[in-house]
Image 1 (tube, rainbow, N blue to C red):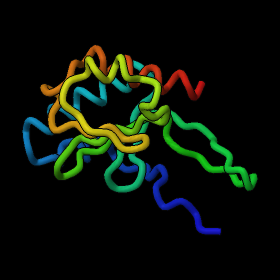
Image 2: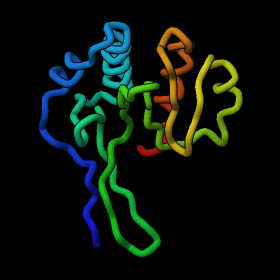
Image 3: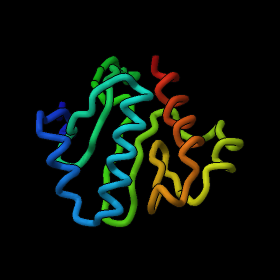
Image 4: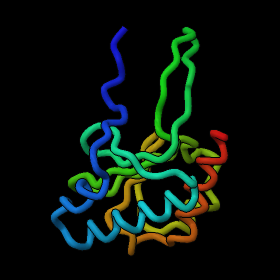
Length: 134
């Protein structure tokens, strides 16, 4: 069975964030690091080459195979800030309606810039996702 390629690397989160070339995107990343660190109580760590993760949890497939993944995290992708919220968004219509401008995938929240969203609502989303895994 293939091993998961995205896992903690030990690389410097500070160096990664410093390497974000757009000043506004870099500032947004610094804000997300602070927010996620406060919510999780965990230090950030690099997962793969471009994801900043916080905490860890073990998941189990129906086959019995297990794996480890970050509790929450984000990545400054080319077009969006991608936030990884393991709870998904199916039962969060009330919060999502107050968030601002965003798109979603199954467990991903895509934001162009933090100024497009309400940071208090974003904190609630991250906290709810983290609590679901506790």
